[in-house]
Length: 114
Image (cartoon, rainbow, N blue to C red; front, side, top):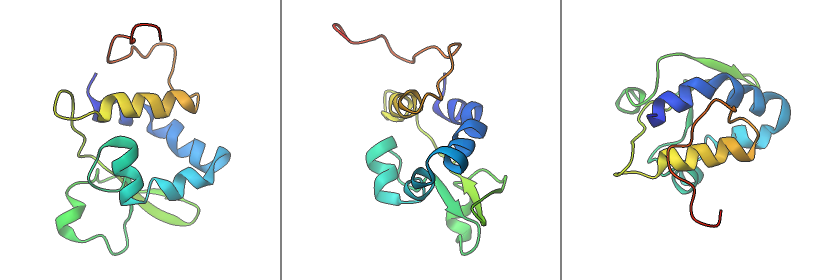
């Protein structure tokens, strides 16, 4: 599965998680450095619509989502293996939060002993 498709498939669950379970994740998903370290992406996963420069806006999906009174767009520029670790990192993040469904196949084989 491609990384962007995985994010889109779980977007409603991710946003609901930020709304109801861990609002701290909402703040973290808007931080560039955290997004880089957590998902190996060069931009925040969530960006506020207000003040988003046109040059950056094209990197985000056009849909606007409102959370905690903020209007946000979701990063649409995801890269896939072998050039990026994003797919595995997104899967791990979703799994740690219980958001990875039983029907979702891992993008990689489990490591021996794992």
